[in-house]
Image 1 (cartoon, rainbow, N blue to C red):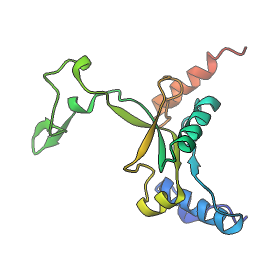
Image 2: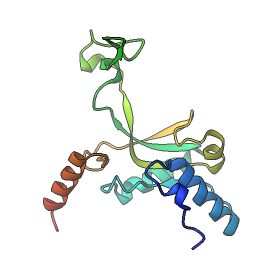
Image 3: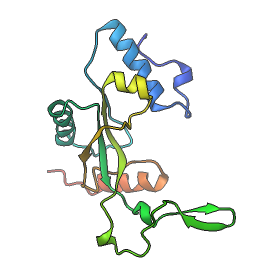
Image 4: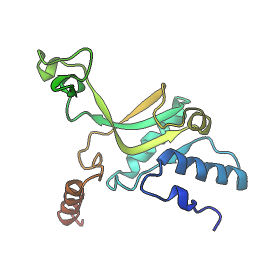
Length: 166
């Protein structure tokens, strides 16, 4: 099947950008040009139809390069540290350790649930995160779940078990 990705793009180390470009190039060669490439990672199983539609609407209404699913950062970046030599130092040039959380500027993280980008931007920047990305705010803890660890998987399973069937 010609649309399947080659083995080199099916490894654990394969990047989403390379896989998306492979699919995009095949599709545009065989079918025709597209306005945007939408990546919906399977590690975000609780993303809703409404969220997808909101993201597409943002892309169309703003003539965007990119729309990214983002959620409030679980740990504010101004409160993070890194190791330098043997010591902990602020990760950011402007740390916020002297501020209460309410005094810090809002911070968001890419949550992995929604990436919509113009093909030209993906080809040019080789990234889904561009300089002119519009945020698709996702605040539902269930929707922003991104399964990256065994603990994330256990949380997702618990959500399935306790889901209201009606």
